[in-house]
Length: 245
Image (cartoon, rainbow, N blue to C red; front, side):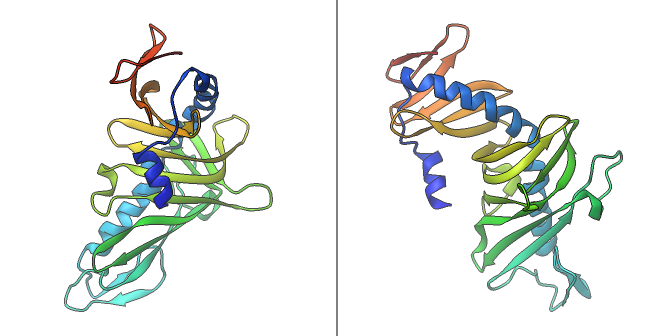
C-alpha cells in the first residue's frame, strides 16, 4: 500500500473549478458510506484487541487470536516474538440487542505480520457477510455476486493503532439499513477524533478531501491546501488562490 499512502501524504492532482463538479458527485456518493461503516471501531478495533492480547504475557497456555491452537508459555514472554503473523478471526455481532457474536452473523478474517521491530504496517483480509450495528445503523459487509468475501487492506501505525490515522482500501458490497446494496471499491483514511479523508479525482490527478462532522473540511492538492467557506461558496489556499464551488 506504499503508493496509496504516498497519494494521501502528497496528492498529485490540482484543485480548481474544473474539478469541483466531479468532487461533489463523489463526495455525495462516498461520505454517507464511510460515515456509517465505523471501520475504525469494528475492523481496526478487532486488530487492536488481538494485538493487545498477544502482547500480554501468556499464562500456562495462550490461544493465538483468531486460532484454535494454543501456544505454551515460555518465561511469560509476549507471543509477538521473532517474525510471523497473526490470523485474527472474529464472528460478527449481528443486528440484535444486545449484540451477540455468532456464526450466522458472518465473520472477519484478518492477517497481521510482525517482526522483532514490531507490527507490519499493512493488515489484509476478508469480511464474509459481516453484520453489525454502528451508530444505530444495521450494516452488512461482504462480497459481490457469487463471492461471499469482501476484501479489505489497512495501513496502520505500528503502535497505538486506534490513536493514529488508519488507511482503508475496501472492495466489497455494503448494505446500510434498508438501503439498496452499494458496491464499494475505494479507499479512505480515518483520522481519530477529527473525521476522515477521501482520495478523489482532481485535475490531472487526485486530491484529498477532509470531512469533519459530515461537512467539507480542508482540501489538499498539488496546488496547496484549501480551506473552504461553504456559506461564501469558495475555497482558498495559503497563497490566496480562490476556487468557486
